[in-house]
Length: 290
Image 1 (cartoon, one colour):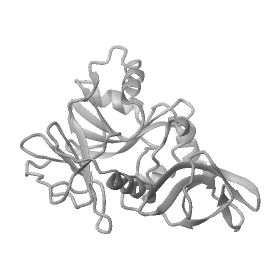
Image 2: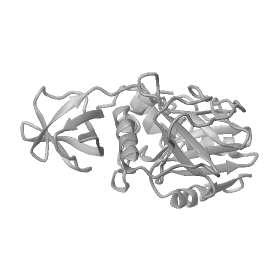
Image 3: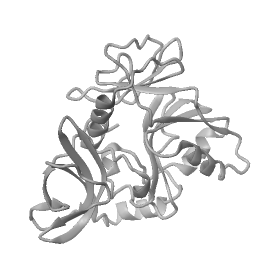
Image 4: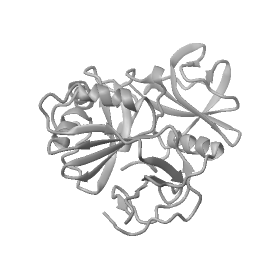
């Protein structure tokens, strides 16, 4: 963890749909380890990784960046969904655990299309005024995320759209309400982000995730498409007139239209279309792997 200043080298724009949830107390690590799909116990203080919360049937409720601040404090950055609902659902599993779970309405989240000033890889950087910086890109597509109480971030709809598109192009599905609790981590190709563990022990949905992994039963995965027209989430992807899968996330920016779909790993080599419009498959990028 660094105490260097994370002064912006470029414009910071607001991420209004993002929320920060904090877990504070002596049982914070143990609680998150038992609930979330990645190995929190193996995460060092001052570091972060991708993680998520699953249903008992192994379907993704939420995806987020989880930061281990210290031995008794975790914070997760939730890009999509209702944070207050998530907090209430998680509180239902506290029982006698010694921790508090709270939505940090005092914290703002912003971003910039520039390399992080102090953070690198999985390491957080914390400035003297408490601002947190995450490196959320790579050399080819530098991006950084900033969190703070007095964060000066401008509203920029164009930048926000490009940010969402970059997430999808790097394989981070941005799930709307209708797509939550529908997909397993393997169907969303979350192994590319190192977002789940098959070895750490029990958590909701762990049996499904581990069985799929060790028995090699993953039959579907994420595919990135680009289209000449906007692509609606929930639309069928068809090949030779047959439905093959469904669009789970989409983005539009700079007169481009991209989407992520869950499709069979094995399928015929046929032209694919969404709502009658031919789509082109693109390779997923690797800049979000942590």
